[in-house]
Amino acid sequence: MNYVYALICLVMCACWSYIYVKTYQLSGYNTKKIFHSSIEFKLAFGDKNKIVFTKRLIRFIIVYLAIDYLLFLVINTYLLNDFLKVVDCTIVILFSPVVIILTHYILLPLELLIKLIYKKRAVKKLRSKKVIKIGITGSYGKTSTKNILAQILGKEYKVCLTPANYNTEMGVTKTILSKLDDEDVFIAEMGARHRGDIKALAEMVEPDYAILTTIGEQHIETFGSLGAIEETKNELTIYMKNDGVVFFSGDSKSNLKLYEKCSKKKYLTNSEQGYAYSKDIKCTPNGSEFTLVIGDEEARVKTKLLGKFNINNIVTASALGRYMGVSMRDITSAIRNLEPTPHRLELIKNSYFSILDDSYNSNLVGAKEALNVLSSFKGRKIVVTPGFVEMGEESSKANFTLGAWIADVADYILIMNETNKNYLLSGAISHNFNQRNIYFASSRREQTDIIAKLTCEGCVVLFENDLPDNFS
Image 1 (tube, rainbow, N blue to C red):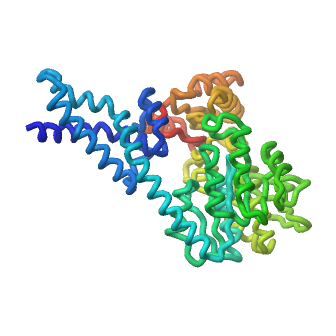
Image 2: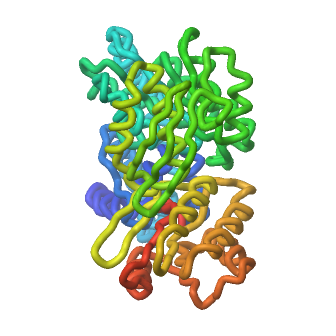
Image 3: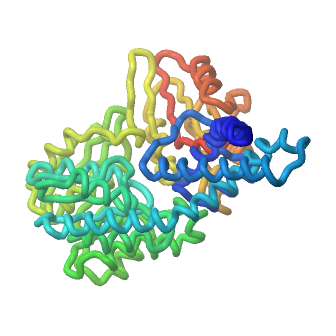
């Protein structure tokens, strides 16, 4: 009877634990984050992201449920009197975060071994091929620059690149093992949440070329300081090939600082004192036009991409492309045919109104550029935002600033969560924004209903940043 009862309780516990397991996966299998999310009850209740049943997660679920089942048997058989047996399922459910952490550490040696085996296979495969390797890191613009560079180099080379946000060790490993074949160039986007992350990726890939996009205070909550972010991003230049070539986007103080420190062959972009830059820029709601300068060559180019920030990404990618032998004519052609990276200042039009989808942006630099683009549109302007997270002590200041900037451009503001509500509201009010034009939503359904109420023919809706499921 105890076995049947334990099985029934296990099914009930599995249904409840779904939300904890989902939060655990979305946190990047981070035990510290799942602990804090559970304590603060900031769990992944939303439907924006769903569980992905990877082999790792399936292993985790099997062990997790096995531990739960044993707990039910022990509690029901040995530890509780008849009255308390009624609540043993509740007891196990309440301790779900503890069981998740316990399961994590039980499986950790196996997961590290599996990771090491796959990584060694990927490195062996990469070393066996005569392929030009390029690493791209930075705080902002990595994915856009990667995609732009791939289209430019595609004029002369066969290119393999890490897809979407595959910018971790396992993401790069998976790309090498599953996608790299007979290509001439391999482009690896390299992300970091902790010191040493870029070092591990650089030692694995051994890039011939490196690009450092704009460096700023994104993820400062994780790193602790801008200096720590700079040191981490600079790991790419230190641990790439000794005879490698580095391209620095000169659009931030951090980049200029690292450019001066770099002892390898290096080129500066987005600076008139550098190797490549843009001038005579004309930005419209339908795209941009500018003169591209690389060395002593110039070309007038047009692109569907919006905003000065995208122009900077184009310039840096074009500089490396030209260095690698792609002609200015082919670079110009590639730029003309560039498609926006999804959710990064992507313009989506319909017959009634337009959407500026900047939902994958989570920094002040990108938000300022998105608002500059929004200001170029005619008609009613609506901004939907949850503000910024993962900015540590800077969060209140950053969200106050964002609220003020939005107030200078928008006609209506829709704030999507409680986390940053007061900071965004205070910032908007400080710039004399009409409080009657500020709306709040706590769910996707509420958001949709309010947007339907506010939109009109010819208006523009900017989605600025998107909050993770485990924030409310």
